Image 1 (cartoon, rainbow, N blue to C red):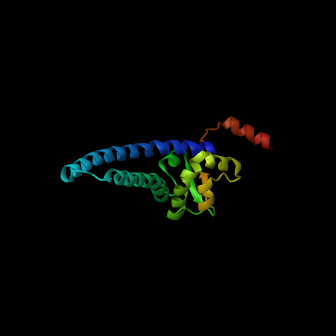
Image 2 (cartoon, rainbow, N blue to C red):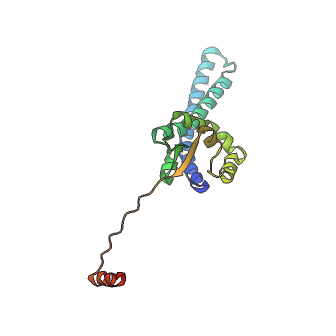
Image 3 (cartoon, rainbow, N blue to C red):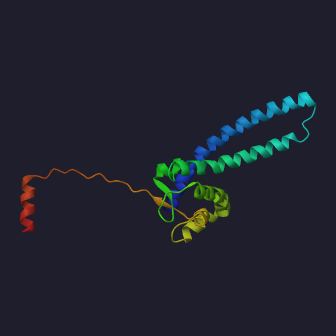
Length: 168
């Protein structure tokens, strides 16, 4: 699959992922305000609990970010919602379906691919259009085959006879 299809799929995935993260952040803000207020009322001070709470929430956010791609690529045979919509899929270099290990490697290296557009440069300048995550995980993003329905044309008898004359 080319860079255009991959970028289109990623935009769709980031819309879904953004909505998931917004729900998480709203929940985290509510949790923080209730928890920290309760602890402050009981103990009198939170003594750095805010920093621990933020650190845990950043970790959970990272797991959501990585987990989104790992979950969908593993469960949906190499597709995320964006990839499914664009009709592209991740497979292993040998053509077998992607597994948990490959999806995890790809997802963990995604931030490096996005940093300074390293993934874009690698896709453009690599013959097999692989980003860093694909190179390390041994995967390839392919375009799904699309079945084309055969057209059922009615051919008149005069056209059939003309075809027979032309063939002889």
